Amino acid sequence: MAKRYGKKRRKRRGSFSRSVVLLAVASLLVVALLLGLSTCKRKKAAAEALWDGSWYADELGRVQDEKELISGLKAFYRRTGERPFLAILGNVSPEALDGYTQDLFGALFADSGHLLVVYDEWGDGLYYLSCHRGADSPLTEADETALLDCLERAYADGRNDSYGTAFSAGFREAAGLMSVQKRTNGAAVVLLSLAAVLALLGVLLLALLRKNARRARRWMEDEG
Image 1 (cartoon, rainbow, N blue to C red):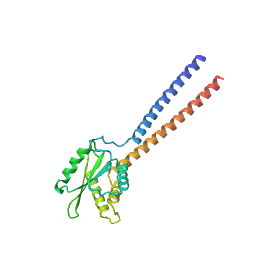
Image 2: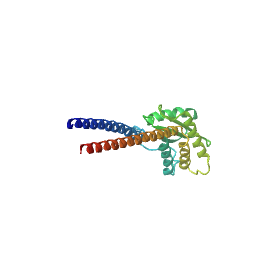
Image 3: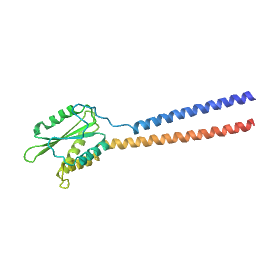
Image 4: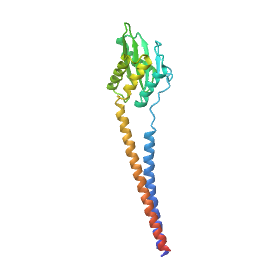
């Protein structure tokens, strides 16, 4: 009898151990996936010789309220994952501006984690805006158009009485309109779903532990 009971106990213990190991492994995989998604950091730009980590370059000396401007640029970065860089230039030929912007992007950055926006002042009170993103950027042409529209509106708004304030407002408004926001929301749904799976695994593990505890108590009572 003792040998038979001993064999059953070893069998139960092995079944319990396998179940716990399987649930533990599944839980760890889910946790690792959750941590991987939640701590996934945006791409950091490679340290290129022409880019010193700043947020803008002002060739014309127009920016007076630097903190306000950088605040708007950072807001765009937080919402989209694309780090904007604003270049304020003068007297670039309008016909050559798009090509100039593309060449400047290549000279400044080596990755697609940046969005270059060029503001060019031309004669007779005219100005031109151009932007360029990396080849595998999550932003689209429609996003670029929306950004330039927002910057134009903010620049024309009389309430924005400085360059820094105007550009900051434009980038803040555009941040909420980018298509990348939909992907961010989708990632949140995935995280919530995985969290629910993890919670379910925890409940199942707890139920299994209680069940095996009851079996152990009954076996001990039978032994007694």
